Amino acid sequence: MRLLVDAGNTRVKWQLRDGQVLVRQGASRFDDDVFAELAGIGGSVSGVAISTVISESRRLELEHKLAGVVPVRPRFFWSESVRNGLKSAYANPETMGADRWHAMYAGWRKVAGAFAVIDAGSAITVDFVGGDGQHRGGYILPGRGMMLRSLKSDAARIRFEDHKADAGEPGVTTSECVLHGLFWLWQSMVTRIQQDCQHYGIDSILLTGGDADGIHAAGLRAEYIEDLVLVGLATIDAEEARQ
Image (tube, rainbow, N blue to C red):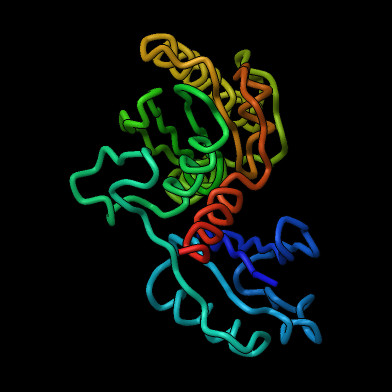
């Protein structure tokens, strides 16, 4: 069996697969006992593939956590300049977050034509890919949690309760002003994404990430795929295993 891991800045998600069959999956915050559910069955893991954007110190900590439950050393998959026709826009592709590359590769293998990927995680990333496989570039914006934390820490007199909001009209309390303001920004972002997709001739938009529901509520017309990064990672891992 193969263990696939998507280690983000906030959460670690994993899937245990036997060929194409999903055997078990889990997700938790990095500082929790991430792989507790693998206790007793980790010995059956023959390979570990990891996509991550965490710091080097945390990457080593993740390796240590894995060493306690699986008998094999993990392989880390990073961004590439090209793979099976998908071409990075970066002159130095290794500086792109691996999660963005793996999400794009999942899209490339799924969509017959141009597409966009929006990953609404700790940061919101937007990437455009042409039908020829050329990555047109993208955007990185602060995610919901990051934006709310910045208001709480950098604006001492702004006090608000955090809850989900799907309205963008002017608020009449501080909490509404903050949360409706965030949704208002998302609505503006969605409008721009859809304008850019029209400009680039993109009909397919793929949406993933923990805050995908909020982006969808803001009006984005997209196909939601929960574990898009892991889908791309699994595809690349399988391709490498066949070589």
